[in-house]
Structures are given as structure tokens and as C-alpha cells.
Length: 296
Ligand code: BG6
Image (cartoon, rainbow, N blue to C red):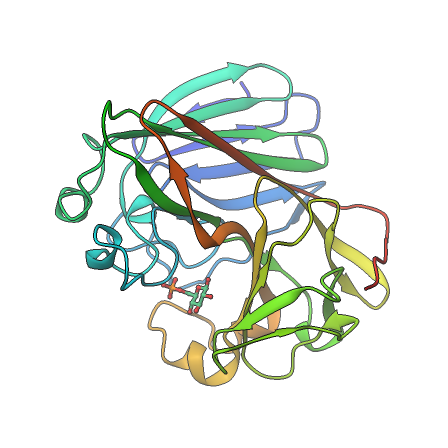
């Protein structure tokens, strides 16, 4: 059987490739492990809670309806950092396709975290579709504004923690020439560096990155992760480095920042504005592609 469901999680094993497995917690509909061709592709903190008491530190947490903190929007301003999708238990809708094995999860106000949803009085349905291919993983989100009268404004982001062997000889490519907001320096500039390297904390939002920019994580000239985005114009690149990771109680081992990088496709620079009854779709595809350099 390629789909196993328990009270707390869903595990998909590829029917023709048993060394491709994805594990999804119902809490947050968080993918916390993706093994492709026998190798784990995602980073997961050894101290993370998988019991629904805290968002997962690692894997692919879902960020909705706000990225970071928003102090300006009348509805979003009361929500905690990164919203409530990652701290709500989603409903498992079941398998929708045999091959590639595909499953869906849903979240609406009825299932959402009761303490948080009361801070954001909107009518919506989210549907997450996860497809496991032989050598790739696709996550697709559909957001529907089910209100008959009220516009809905939100951010979406796949907070993807990618596993790397050694961040110090790894870089992220194909963002050269893009406008970036450095969240640490709080400045915006055009990043002319050919690649993003990691020798200290990095927390940058690359804005309006054209869809044909295929972001790659490259180590010693070999692409280890390739990321395709659809309808997700922004990409956050984050590594907490020493000080920030030591301050996060759920981040272990403490030198785990050497084995991870977050490349997070999202719609975070602006809010998506959805009229009553409208639907918005976006997706990310993770795979292991050919090396491709896209310069300024
Ligand atoms: C990243 C942000 O997306 O998430 C960082 O750019 C933030 O600023 C990081 O520190 C982790 O956030 P959290 O809420 O999971 O600790």
C-alpha cells in the first residue's frame, strides 16, 4: 500500500520506487521528511516537537496568512509570526491519484487553531496537494475566499528547510541581479553577487523573481536541490547561523545550521488580494536538476 494513515500523520511510499517516501504530519500539514532515491532531502531539527504542541522546526512548514509579522494590516496585525496554518491540524482528504501518488489536506476556519483563528475573521478554504514522483516532490496550494462579501488579503510561503552536507561550501544560485530586502540590515538593494554564500546569518527576501529563474542549491559544482516555482514571485533565503540557532530552543543540534538552508518560495513582498468567491493557486517543485547558471 502506498498510503498509510495514522491519527497524526500520512506516509506516502512511491508504488514503483520504494526508496521515495514522504511523511506528512496532520499538524500544520507539515512535510517533515522526504526521502528521494534513498536519501533524505529535508532538514529536521532533532529537538522539534512532532506532537502538535509547536510548529515543526524543519521540513516544509506552511506559512499563511502572514509572513513574519505584519503591523499595518487591520486583520493580520494581531496574528503571531508566520500565521496559523503551521499551528493548526489539517483535515486529511485522502488520496486523489494513484500514480504519482497524490494526497490532499484541507484547512478552513472550523479546523484552524481556535485561539488564532478568532484573530483573523475570514471565510476560506485551503487545499494542499502533495505529489510524490520518482525523483521530485510537488506541493500545491489552493486558497479560496469563501466569503460572499469580504475581500481577503494574505501572504503564502513554503518554508522549505533543505538538507545540505556543509553550508560553508554550498551556495544558492540564479538570484543574481534580483532586488533583495535584507531583513537583518533592513535595506533593499539589487544583489549583484553571482551566488548567495553562507559565512554568517543570512535572512533575505528576493522580490519578484521571474518564474523562469530556477533556484539551485549547489555544492562543489553539483546541484543538490533545484526548485521550480509557480505563482510564487518571492524567495526567502535563510540560515540562522550560530547566534540565532543557539537562541532557538527547538533547534538541535546547535551546529545544525551547517547542514541546512531555507529556500522559501512565497508571495510575501505584497499581500495577495482575493475577491469574494475567488481562488488563488501556487506551487513549488523540488527535484535534482541539471546545473544551470542564470546570470544578471
Ligand atoms: C524565515 C524568516 O522565513 O523564518 C526569518 O525570514 C525567521 O526571519 C525564520 O527567523 C524562522 O521563523 P520561525 O518563526 O519559524 O522561528
